[in-house]
Structure formats: C-alpha cells, structure tokens
Length: 446
Image (cartoon, rainbow, N blue to C red; front, side):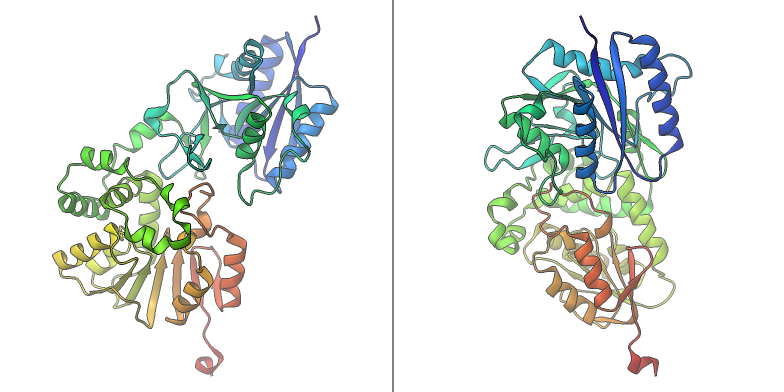
C-alpha cells in the first residue's frame, strides 16, 4: 500500500520570526524521523496577497499528487511547552491527517489557536442561522475535543486534497467579503464535506512583540488589571451598572452584534437602541492586555501637562479619552444619542465635574477616533467634517488601521487603503498610521 502524502503549505511574509523558524525546523526533523508512514512535501509561498499564496500552495500540492494539504501560517508555535527534546507536539499534522482518514466525510480539520489581541477569541466560527454570517465562538464554547464547526482558522487547517476536485478554481479570491479560511470552509461544506476542529490540539500564536498567545497566557493576562486609568474606568462602569465584574461579564455575553446585519439600512437607530450590555461588553473588551497597552500608548503620547482642547468621535464609554478630561483637558465626547455607552459617559462627566461637551465643536488640538471609523458608513463625510475642525498642526489619533476584524457585522467600512488615501489627500500626514498631523496651510505658513 502506497504511503499517503502531506503537503505542508506555509504562507509567509518577508519577515519570519526566528522562534517560529526554529520551531518549524524541529517539526520537520521530527516528522522525517518519527513518521515514515507518510511522505512530506513543503510549499512556502510569499504572502503578498494571501489568496494568491494559498492558490499557489494548492496548485503545488495537486501537481505533486498530495493526499492532504496542511495550511500553516508563519506566526505559530507548535511546541508551546518550549521543550528541548522530542515532543508529541510535532505529531500535530499526522493527528489531523488521521482524522481525515478515520472519517471520509470530513474535508477540513483544524487545531485550536487564538487571536493575538482583543478578546483573544478562538479562531473557530459558526454561522448565524438567520443570515449565514460567521461569528467567533467564545471560550466557554470550546469543548477541548473534536467538534464540528462551520469555519476553522486558516492559520492551521488540514484539507483533504479531493475537496479541490469538487470546488471551482480559483479556490481563493480577494478577501473583500470573507477571509480565505471562511471562503474555503463555505465551499467545502457546499460540496458536501464537513468541517471540524480538534480543540484538544492547541498551538501558540505569536504576537507582534514576540509574545506567544496560548490558553495559559490568556488566563494569566486576564487576571492582571493594574493600570490605574483602567481601574478608574472599571470602578465607574461597575458603579453605573450596579454590578460586580462577574455580573458585568455575564451581561457582556448578551450583546449580539449580529443584529447590525438586520438593521444595516439605519445603523444610527441600531446603535441608539443598544442597551447596557453594550457598556458591559466595552468594559470587558478594554480590559484585555492588548487594549490596555493601546490605552497606555495614547496616554503616553498626548500631553496633559499643557492646556488642550480635544474630542473623541464615536467615543462610546470613552475608556481612553476620558482620562484626558480627568487630567484637565477640555473634551467633547461624540456618539449616537441614546446609546448606553454614551449615556454612561455623560453620567461619568457629571460625576467627576469635568469640562466636557457632547456636540462637535472645535477648533481642536486633537481628535481621537478609536474603534469608530469601521462603524461609519459615510466615513468620507465624517472625516471631512472632523478634519475641518482640527487646528493646523493638530492631530487625528486612530487605531483604525490596526483593526483586522473583517468579520464583525458592525464593521461596515474596512477599506484601509481607501481611508489612508483619503486622509493624505485631505492634508493629513502620518509616519505611523496612528497619529495623523494636519499640514499647516500656506496662508498660515506665510
């Protein structure tokens, strides 16, 4: 009986982390030594555009008659225990292949890994029964065994090669609507295959700062919340809600962003109808380590030792910008009237007797747009208005360009290149995509 063949397809950027390279090299030696029952091939494709790289991997695998294609991104660690010797962690591709051999109905099977920030969501999705839009599973929904899913993360998925006999080429297309993992899993299921994830098999996910995200790291991080501005924000939110943190977490889980797809013709009314679960969700979200780091970044870059007039457009509960009001800046907080998060911000301003307004004014020394541009349908009109209210030499601060949550149903404007071009054409200059400075007009310069 001929040996089965596994093509290991790695989608790679120009920069390849040394820890990952070492881990993958150890895996290659392990597979060659410990699993002679399989032939292994390697296809590494540059990730200039992910869909092109994945198509190239599949073509290479099919040309060499591979039985299985294991898609693996270039930012994972399989040996999350950081062992020095032999480890069963590197048996992962064989374990995934055996799932396909044991069940011919399975076309795609993945392993458990987590997003590198935000809620650290497991990269596993189900589709809404109402509109087929995918949403991430929560941590309590992970069974830590084989579980049938609608989408498993493309960073680590084993695909039966015969799936590509049943779906049309090109198998992957530009990610305007869906990521490549969603595209493939949808097509595989439409062709009659099942999609599963073995959540007993966990791999790590490298953060930008070379930090490995695993379930143990998530547990430790979410238990450490010592940044004083965050503690002030948390105390006020819990006081306003009349809850403890566990009750607020339960309330946060009630928030369902999928309703946005049903009310996309009037998103203003949608946000105005958001109840206190919106506020609870913002509290939990902004308590995650990456969000705390982001909060620290903005607090370190905007000076409070000098007088200034600022604003936050789409402020919600203003976890970052309210600190500037507490430190003496005049601040305007702008969001949809009636939304629970804005009502909290108004209550908080009254409680602390800060110099705050709730209509757009100016001219501003700085305007913040945090977690907001992606929610705005008419982002061009809003940005035009906002920029016109910033002083020459003033700053627009945003975390928009770091947002990669393309599957959030509330995110309606995720064309980063278009927004970046618009800002430049509007006279904004940036070296980082986070802080944009308004060019001094010729009249002022003269």
